[in-house]
Amino acid sequence: MPRWSEHDREAGPRVDRRRWLSMLGVGVACGVAGCSGNGGDTPGDGADGSGGGVRGLDEVEGQPTVSGSYDTVTGASFTTLNPLYNTESSAGTAIGRALDLGYTFDSEGEYFPLLYDMSTDDGGSVWVFDVREGLEFGDPYGTVDADAFVYQIETLHQSDWASTASSGEWGGINVETTGELQFQAELPEPQLLWPESFDPLEYPIPRGLIEPYVDGEDVEGLRQDDELLELSFAGNLGAFVLEEWNRGSGTEYTRNDDYYVRDVDDGPAIFSNAPYFESASISVIEEQASRLGALETGEADAAGVPPERFDEFDRMATVSMRRIPQPFNRILSVNMRDNGWSAGPGNLFRHVEFRRAIATAIGKDDLIEGIYRGLAQPHYTWQPQWSRWYPGDADVPFFGTGDRYGGDPARELASAALERSQYDYRFDGDRLVTPDDEQVTLDVYHSVGQETSQLIAEYVADELDANLGIDVVVESIDPVRFDEGYWTATPEGGTDTVAGESVTWERPTPQNPGPRSVTSEEAWDMSLVYGLNTYPRNPLTNRAFFDGANSSYNPVGYYPGFDARGLFDRAASATSESELADAMAEVFVNLAEEQPYVMLTFGEDLIGYNPDLRGPIEDFSNGWDFPGWHFAEGTGE
Image (cartoon, rainbow, N blue to C red; front, top):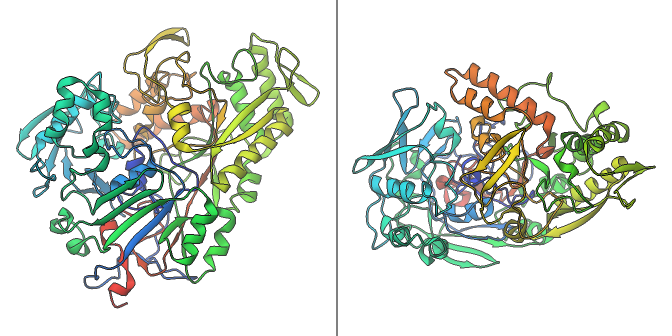
């Protein structure tokens, strides 16, 4: 969605093959704002009845004065700022301050062109991209033209060597330059909602910069190129200029006086002198208490606030709180690969009944009331309930709620899984024990320095102990370390038998490197480190997670037990939204039943802002108009 907006997400960095950027927000990844979507209530003027005056831009008259520095804090450090390879929302925020993506969606959910417009006149088979005039790379790379995008797509994303973050998005698509500022993409099958999938969302990268790496098929050189890591090629393509990336401590920026968005004819008038901050910064502060202290004292202009402290900060005159609907979930990821399930032989996570048992053992109501202070919604299937694609309650099993919560129903489901296992796991009184009569002991990882994440991990551990007799060891970890050593692996490919059929990983990715036998460097059992995007704008985008064991994003090694690919194909060929909704409803009901990730909650982004800031709104599209954000003292308000 919006490519603008920033903040520290208490749930930790959200990873989702790279489309965090899309539905996120800011610089493409929503930082301190909500994200693109079609849910949430937007106050008419964004006025806040307590503690401050953060408002939207609708009532701003005249041109604000450029002033101050927009400074935010995050708990997650950045693995890379290379736009070709980043898949983390926190780093996406940092990249987005200095480099725009192709488009976003405004507060009405309408497509808004940034670097290029998109159109189709044949039902979505062929899409025409019109690159905006006046876009310039930094010296010596010159004008941004259609060839810059086509070359990047054909030689990197469609190659078998580069393994970029977009490698899974352009397969089978014929891309052709049709003019100096125009190119087209012919899709294998029509997609009326292709822009909403964010698959065609790209950064501009100079051909001259990447060409030497293409000629040599030098993937490591491409990953480590200084110009890509430092965004020094960005020219007039971002609101700010990246001055310094201090590894581990954050990024610093100065205002880009040549920002192209000032000259767009189809944007809000307030963009005419954007951005309205002299400088900006993102500080990496692992400790939540220190981040909140910076917000309270005014050292930070935006920061995520945990649910247990929402009311406290909402009463402060120095902070204005916002509740932003967002599409990221809080999930318990269970490792079905060969290096998962450290308790003993086999891997019980692979049995649907056991994943259901885990979901049944973890009470959602107490989780929401006790840890989120009521500021979250239960998560039953792969859409938030405010999404128009949510299938409805009738066919969705509400694991973790009512009579589907507790020790008896959880053990009943687990017992069905134990019967299917070739190994002699069993219940011994209140304990689940291994074939060696040892209590099953598993680990669960959460993001270091994030109190809510730690509390949820401890709650999960208590629930699995009480209701399934599993001893859970809670471990904290830096998200970057978890990403590199646990969540991803070197792509190897391979073949496995899935539901009686041979499946080949022809285009493995770091997030799905091959069959379950292909594993990360480090073993792990369960994780709360990452939440994932549910894509309420275009549910078809979720096929990257679930359309087969060899989908492009599958770090946990999930093998669907239903015809996921067939349903996604049916949805993709739908000629009306009702046909699409029917097919996706079947997908979402099956996912609710199979729990590929144990679904817990949909939280809100609880963001505290400087009360003098104008711009943020309580809407999923919060941040789409970030170029117009400013401090009130610059308007005479």
